[in-house]
Amino acid sequence: MSNRTAIFADKGAKPAGQYSHAIVANGFVFVSGQGPHHPETGEKPADFAGEVRQTLRNLEIILQAAGTDLSRVVKVNAYLTDLARFREYNAIYSEFFPDQPPARTTVGCLLNDIQVEIDCIAVLPGAA
Image (cartoon, rainbow, N blue to C red; front, side, top):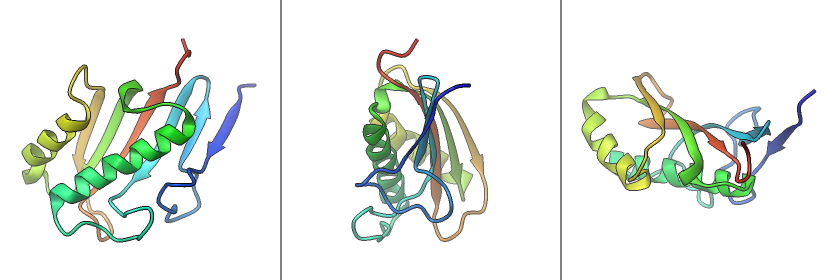
């Protein structure tokens, strides 16, 4: 049986439901969908660009708590309430993944009071 460890990042935004920030298993980190709420204040940015940046920062916090970082992300799933904003999203996303970006899927969907949610899978350092 494989090892499975739940990660709750002390500096991460509080989960909105019954889920772990991430699960580490078999050399991978599976990060739950994150939104744009600031981990300390619970506030969300007033604009779309701010929501995207805060969401990606929230992913960074959880990845760091799990022992990895954005450079080791292999897959991203992004959910946008308005696909017409894809170009803006993609430009901001490129700030966080400038070189050798991970595989990615972006879909339009309804979200509860946020404009973006992102989850990802990363590899731990030293994992095959």
